[in-house]
Length: 89
Image (tube, rainbow, N blue to C red; front, side, top):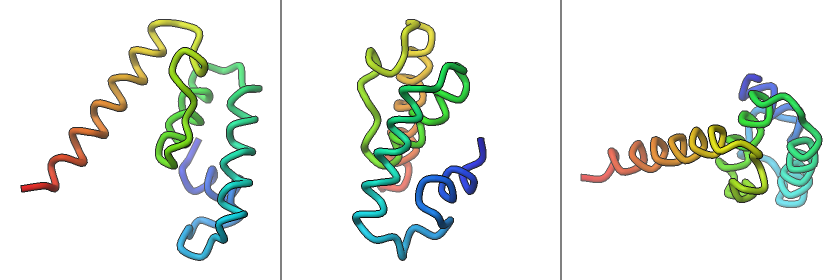
């Protein structure tokens, strides 16, 4: 899954600067539905990560059945938090 493809699929554009709030909400909801239906672990992780970027990811115990996947998600969140902290000095 490529970021541009996800943006196009859920928001009908790759440039979020012009996306109306109702379109953004609808796209996020569509993505959450797709996450719930997706059975492939890698695709589920990609969709969850995408939702995380929009502050709309479900809790780990809801999104992932296996502890291994939940741990990978925690590691991803830690990496994001660390990268956000690097810009502060």
